[in-house]
Length: 155
Image 1 (cartoon, rainbow, N blue to C red):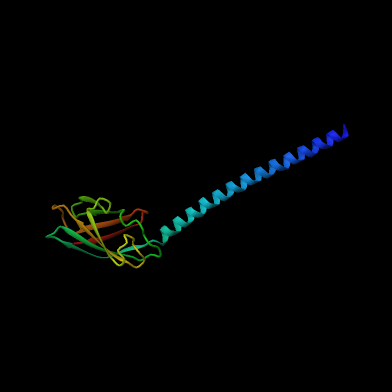
Image 2 (cartoon, rainbow, N blue to C red):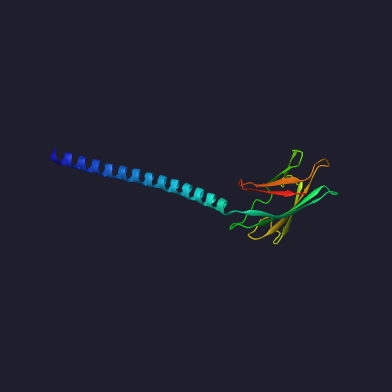
């Protein structure tokens, strides 16, 4: 009976060590997954804080009903979603108009590399064609897909 008890204890000890090792491996794997998610989230948030776009000039062509809006990427990161920018235009009477680069209503002209990416330091012209009935001056709010926005008054 002595040998049998010793063998049983040895087997149980080996099984316990294996189960503890498996449990530790699973826990370490989950901790790595959580750390990767947190790291990615922090990097994304950090990049959004480093993003800055400034409207450097805007003009209103009343005959063509068009706003010419010049914007410059003054931040530390590139903005790769140039085809996903919204513009909210409010006239003096309080009417609000919505435009987007997604639907082709807003024409985009890049002054720099023509790659549909808003590079650091690059200037981009946005041409917004307005409906015929509006009352100047106009407040133009540019909203990027990251939530960053800037406002400019024209006219």
